[in-house]
Image 1 (cartoon, rainbow, N blue to C red):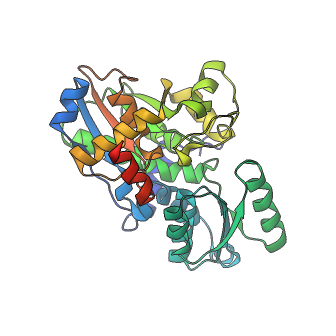
Image 2: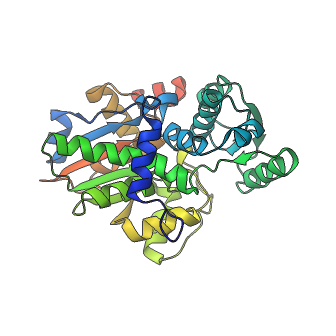
Length: 328
């Protein structure tokens, strides 16, 4: 870690070594049709092919890999709308550690069932009071002990997520591809912070942009203001994975330094991206996982004559919601 306790390229490289054989090295996919649509070269990194169906397993597995036997025996606690929940539950199961997972009471069924599959204890909270999840987690840690595995505001979690950025730069270089930009989804900012750390260190001319739902664009607004901004929560979004109340304290320290900017997309643009991913790449994307592709396809980022990687962060979507998206 650097002098501020933030992850460096070396931390991400060490995370990649720690995760070898546990995580999936997801490919870079390409579609001639999508290239023609954007007027450039669009490469897609499909993290829905990752263990538990999202990038979150990377960070969770790296964080638990830093715990000693005594800490693992006391167990872990995490709060999440679903993807971090599954990542931590799976990592805890693999490590033989007990886990308590705090999830919103309206979490998508597919994410709840995906978490239950790994055998943790599940505690629910009301999403209308988003800060309650942290209070519940802190109370459980105080009562029972254990380690709180935060969804994004943790240097080792960020380093684990950054392995996706490490992979995509190495994959592009292996093919002789020079990347103009990388777009990735952003909720609390852990994925984009980790990716930006790796990409900017290995490919300094490549710009990195966060992508959020229009009604929850706290990182975009925070970058513009120079300080963290909250979401009001007055308007909903289908992107349940990206509804963090505000950027993380640590993640924003990274993102305000490394990101070229922030983008936002509408729910309608997200649905169109889900359709395109299924039609042209045969990928099942959850709404939050499709925002970066949506930004490229909708022209929120101009891909003309550029080579751009979009990270699709997950595919844990309820079948009924996915069916509605395809039929829209």
